[in-house]
Amino acid sequence: MKPIQSTRYTEISTPADFNYEECLVHLGRSSQENLYRIKEDKVIKLLKIDGELVLFQLTSVPGALRIEFPLNAPTPNETKQVVAYIEDWFDLTTDLQGFYEMAETDPILNPVVQQYFGLRVIGVPDLFEALVWAIMGQQINLTFAYTLKKRFVESYGDSVVYEGETYWTFPDPETIVALPFADLRALQLTGRKSEYILGIAAVMATGDLDKKRLLQEPDMESKLLEIRGVGAWSANYVMMKCLHDASAFPLADVGLHNALKAQLDMERKPTLAEITELSANWSGWEAYATFYLWRSLL
DNA sequence: TGCCAGGGATTCT
DNA sequence: AGAATCCATGGC
Image (tube, rainbow, N blue to C red; front, side):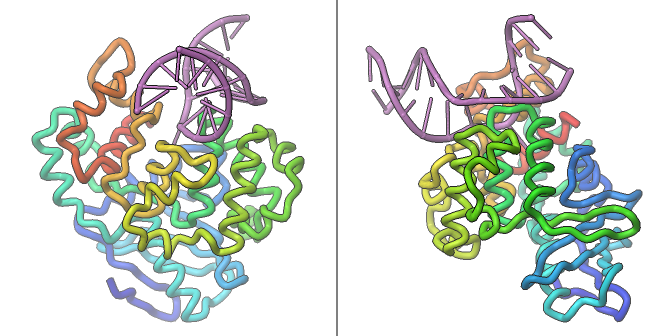
């Protein structure tokens, strides 16, 4: 989709079924989120593009998302990269028709799709961020995971202040790989998680792992599973949130289990075998099924 | 207060 | 290969 550009703003056209409000519900799920800020109907975020900090503000207008740059006029390249980031972040290029058709005949998905129609899989476009966030979220409650991310970002990210609020970028692998183990432990990451994050920072800082190349791999999951600290859940989480794989499926996800328990009005959480059976019909759209079910927990 | 949390590696059968 | 066990720490 070709951005409409004026001197004051840039617009990206959105699919007919795009629902900005539903996306904002997802984005607003934690009060501890510090990688963007939601102000009424605006989303404000800081990115680092070729070493420069670029603050942008997003609003919804009929048929499009409008991007404005409150601090500095962007270069053409910065505009282009922000547009690409937003298309990635808001999942604007996926046609959901196949998912919606499948969901019509699915007793579990039909109600959630009706309720949250137009919700996209809100992504984490930055591969390092997606991997680190997956590691941080392993086996701890989400509230504490956000606390860890907040400390991590505010210790090692870059920031600017706009209208009295501080905006942060996610730290670069190059910054993190240079840290002593003890500095990560001090954030109250476990020893293992500190090791995993340093390992990921190392392969990304050297360029051995990068998103563009990973996307060209015939088997992205196997490549991700080679990374220490990345198991089946994390690999599928990253494929879903960063690599736009509609069939990615974090089967072991506790949130998925709780959502299914609630949707099916069960006394206990479903077993993995039961989930495999329930989801047989979702083939090719497991990531969207999971994301809509997560939404039902908010 | 004890169980649980958007798991994974390691070690045991 | 599949099943236990450890890791570690805060939330509720």
